[in-house]
Length: 530
View 1 (cartoon, rainbow, N blue to C red):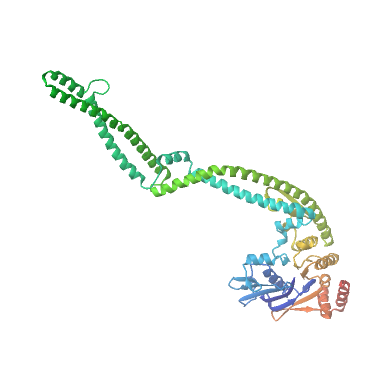
View 2: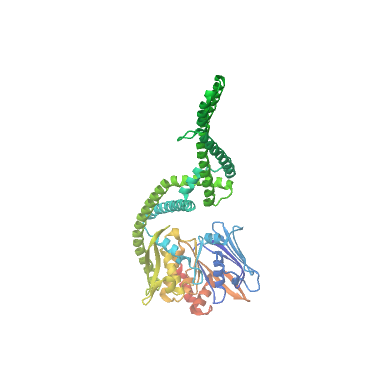
């Protein structure tokens, strides 16, 4: 709770310090005295951003600081330039973080302030507080765990699917590329190497083909006698005219020539292997060039990296299929489990809604709002959220209109509704300090008294700071602050005894000196001392 509030140069306030108590703290004063300046200061301490217009006229800087019972100090400083700073225990902190921290400590219920209590998340949180403890600490905690696991599993599944899709898209012609890689066997400098080798082997094949023709001329091939056979036949005709010695020499020479030619046939067979080699080189060279075109990599170093990548990616793609199947099954199972838990939560939420509606409507009757009915509208969601599969909207019906509370209720009615909701909350959902700005607006008589009694009850559970114009409510305060306007400056002081009687009398009659009003004030103060 707030122990001390210090304000400098905010609104009509030059410099004040208020020591609050733990119960009901009331702040009163005539219209225009500066009560709203205190509310604006508290708004700044809960993260309000529109602070420049709150700076006191003629000043360059405004400061609001609260010292809490925990020992913490929270500070907002606003400059006329539009800049501002936020500090906790003297350490600068981002406004967003400051707001989150401050709103766990102080809440302002005002027709001017941001009514965070009516935030959709906050409404559902309030509703859930009415569910049985076994549901809150059992089913809901289990749902939160299952939901987070399902969420993480879905992220993992989407990531896996995305990568698979990217690889499948990038390598849509993967089968052909894979075959080209197997054929080309890329390596650094391969294209030049293959071109040179192809040139050499093509020359060899041409020479071997020419030798093969010469061999066929000499031997006659498979179908006829060749030149050597004709020479032997002609020499046999001449043998009759030769000496035995010459005949023998010629015969030996022909046999040697014939044997040499026959031995050359094995060398001519090399042409087949050379042609096969040439075809292999041409296939590999063609595959390499097509691979470059399909991959868009003309540089062989890049092509080598591409080849390595495709092997890795396609290998991963094949292996990831089992992961995809398992992740899909796991995500589906978690979603089913979460859905089942969400349906259980929904059942108990509807029951909690009836309890909360009944309590709030009873309190609204006591707050002079019997003509207005409070209800909760549930909407089932198609998609699970961190808190289940429901949205809850607080609805008011005034006999002629029905709609969300911020659209139906007036400022005063909204303040009293917020009071009823706060009274309906369990202690753990109440903030240490609640600030109400003119919660009794539009009330009088018994309704005002009842509102004051409810505020008094609430102050027994948390610190309440109340700005009020209603005497019967002000009389219930544990501490009473009076704000007055003097010499164009707002001054605040804690009052008690006769000073307080006079202020209550002023609130009752407009005159602090009227004896009848003072007597009425004494009665109110005596009756409130319980």
